[in-house]
Image 1 (cartoon, rainbow, N blue to C red):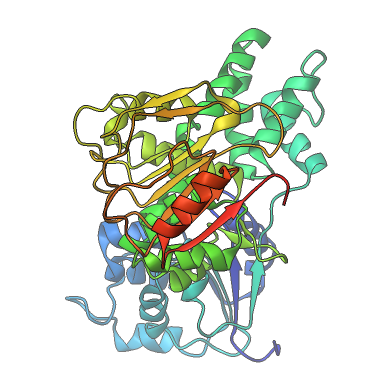
Image 2: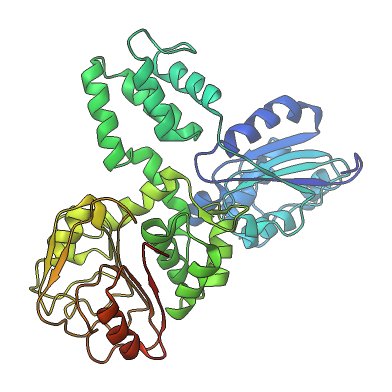
Length: 433
């Protein structure tokens, strides 16, 4: 950008990645060189709490170093004198954590910035950037920097305390380069003196995230619309590491607008797309999604929307009583014991869209035993994959819109199923192939 133009820089990345810290560092270093400056924190949250007019008053007050100046559109508009004081001056402004383009535009309408002014906008939503000179994407810290940051917060110096080297590495591997997690966990573990207690705390974190970290990451999920949130949770449970186009096809079959939904999640820094077109997601964001579903019903598995923990899946599938809220099931046959299903196991799952029983090509796999037949699946089912499918036929009234994959089916079973599937998008995959 030219020195004599108004420059706008976007800082973008997932929650907790350090956007505000970077903006604060730049502000502290350069703001004194300008005629006025303002660091407006938590724009998204504060605008919802107090309204945009309040934020505009804060912005103008800081720039003019005055108190409680009302703005245009409020009950007491800015005086002509104050407008003249603002117009054409060289300002340095940081708008932190902006969550909607309309808020950015509204704040911008209140000012006529002078040549050479600089505006930094931090956000987790890339879609708000319409007219910026550049976007800086904040990426996770490397292992060495992560270890130093954790140790500073946990032990007060940049290297692990004697006896805590392995624990420190475990925390760093868990945080995966997210500064917020490293700082919070370092401070949290610092107050736990016993190494056994610290290890126990880390084990708990592997199941349930730290509340502070969870609340920050969940903010981005809370801002998703209805379809985007369903897509996000589907990816968390079933599609991390899967081909983007195949996932999009499944989501479209569920009428979830998969293509635009995946694109939106990428802009909101909740997922990334690898060079091989695979959907990737940070482990802490994945854990946030898992916790969201856990909180749907902590004590009743049947009321959770998605299941992939083998023990949880077993408990729900072997309990044939009562209607279940589950929309998707992922079951690893290599990590569990034999499973016994009744004829009406899936009849009581009217919302089921995704069902996958899978196992390693080689090695031990548990068996799934089914009574003589299965009653019909949900009409909403759009994906069925079943390794070692135990029957020679599918339930009656099987929907032709379902994508079906059977692995290691016997020849007799294959011929019967092939005939029944008809127009379905289906395939048979064998170990020998």
